[in-house]
Image 1 (cartoon, one colour):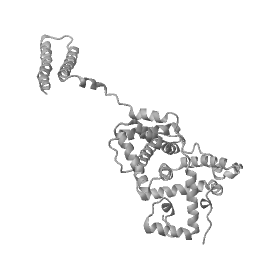
Image 2 (spheres, rainbow over the protein chains, first blue to last red; image 1 turned 180 degrees about the vertical axis):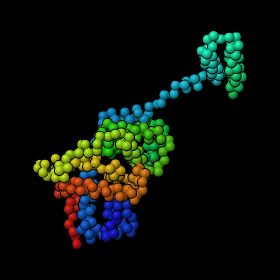
Image 3 (cartoon, rainbow over the protein chains, first blue to last red; image 1 turned 30 degrees about the horizontal axis):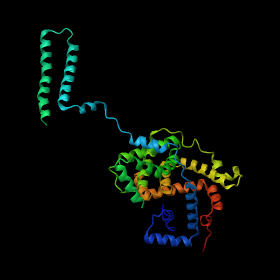
Image 4 (cartoon, rainbow over the protein chains, first blue to last red; image 1 turned 60 degrees about the horizontal axis):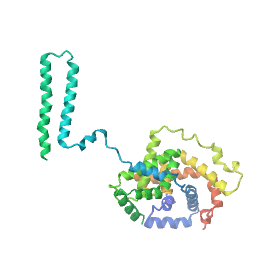
Length: 140
Length: 204
């Protein structure tokens, strides 16, 4: 809805016009009472909007710094990354054993011999894997 | 000049220099707070939003590139945070805190005191209410232009729109405020220091 008889006064005052368009608009304003009124209204509103900045609330800067710079705590499971590699492998194997054993024991309250054999086999597998993995890590 | 200072401060920030963050907060937070307070109405939320903007600046400190001034960068973040909050929170009705219409439109009836300080304080109150009642995008565009001095292009980037749309948002916002605050603004003109900002008469 651009007015064709008047230039873009607000854009001019906002510093958005350049070159010839700016020059033409500025020249128009000197001849046009209506546009001079628009300039005055723009300035009055601008002055009204130009409220002074209030000082920062007490402690604002320090609180902002604390919040920004706060070191993130490492996520819970990361502590074990600090262990040497073989320990880690051992730990993994141990946890696997515990989990498996727990699950199996829960299922097999009245375990027969074949179940016990299976359990023993299951327990052996991760342990063997861990033993195989550990030297590989140590070699690095 | 501002760009040089921005770059220097951001280089310090990239080296984890917390003192640089204090300098940035001192330089930019007052303006950002004024903007956020006018946008969000709740002062505590405004402070929260501004702090969050600095948290994001800190996190981005090694990725920052001087493609925009820091002022533009921070105002863009605060604008988006404010608009998101307004959308996500079910705020109290926008008109709840407004003075009755007749009070805003005819200040002379209720404001016999001609003292300029009082008048300007009342203008501030009326203006705050009218700003609060503007559509969020219009208000953001207006404040980014008048408070932060952002270009149409920068405002468009902050609001995810075009420079042409920004010009139209500004035009509508100003027309509305001029209409609603006509009495106040004319009064301000009469009392203003600057005669050029007063009432220019036709010169020819």
